[in-house]
Image (cartoon, rainbow, N blue to C red; front, side):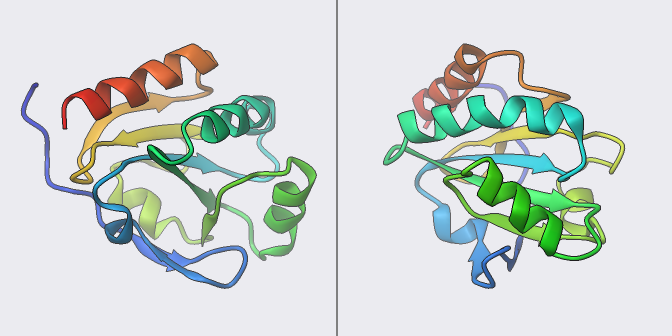
Length: 144
């Protein structure tokens, strides 16, 4: 296993109005998907993200990070329309995105965190396939 950085620690209000902290998910692999409701590649990859999230439920957690939307209305409609099975932190000013070392020009983006909360993989742009994401999750779990 190569040397990893410090654990990622972000928290905020979800689109459902609940508080969520990545610190609470320590002990499991966590997938963080950065998205915007009007982003065509985000929309294209969402069904596959949903499938993988359901396949790994119990062994890995998914968390969305919604950026750019100026009110929670559009991302809430997106989550309902795509039947997103996991919560998303609402980050309209992208402060959490910047904490992850990404910029608002890099969406979609998907990060895989190991059980200690350290970034093991970053996919900038659309995830190439369900298999790729499943492999990244498996690799992060194996390194625990």
